[in-house]
Image (cartoon, rainbow, N blue to C red; front, side, top):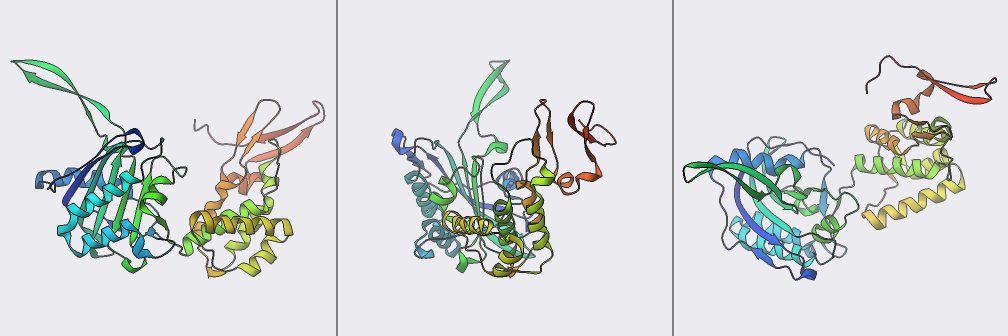
Length: 353
């Protein structure tokens, strides 16, 4: 689920600051003793820095295997929304939870900023949000200053606004379902620490997400295993193209009909079942047997198809999804009898490199 948020009118109501060490390295936790108030002159500078990373992210929600009320971040955020005077105490509790989850040796220490944001425009309705940002790296800055009647070069260490490592924006919306949560982690999908261990969020299983996941699992299920590097993508991808084409032609997804008409073979059905189980266990997403198909999100699965050819002559071909769909528009394949070699002729208008 992706909702349209407008940040033009936002104001930062207050900040809780913390330094988060790693307990396994005996690094301490330091938290604010007082709420930090942002002056009017700094609002226009800080608001874009805080909120820019949250554009175009997929919505998630707080979850817990037992009960939503047992998700500690969800509880702290709910308390702040009910009484903004608790921002300092609840912000410090959030920092303490992050510290308690930071014992793995690979987790870096860093600076934490927790803020209450007012006036986020959600489809014309003003909402509040809690913004949590963590920076794990310091950047050296140079400045020229006047001292003792002369100019001197000074160095400082600071946070680069373009390189904030982790973030979370909890919008006061869909409270009973775990709020509407946006999150990012520069460490990528490999890092479960921020999303799972600390926040405890999962993607919201709407038609867009389910369509995307079904398409991705379909490509994985029907694609042949052990494909040679020199195998033409247009041949290897044919079963996946047929599966995606079937999904695009449907308005409603039916698991039973999909297995019969798109997967077909028992091997493909078995692989799809394994992917479905992995989706539920690792991502906490239960695949509904019937839902409305989002055709736009079906197309995104094309990125999983084979797009690279490595030939024995040292040549590598990387094809865009558009070319994989219709290779005959720009590629001509054949066999040279004189050289006793296969060839691929590429048609193009101009070199874009």
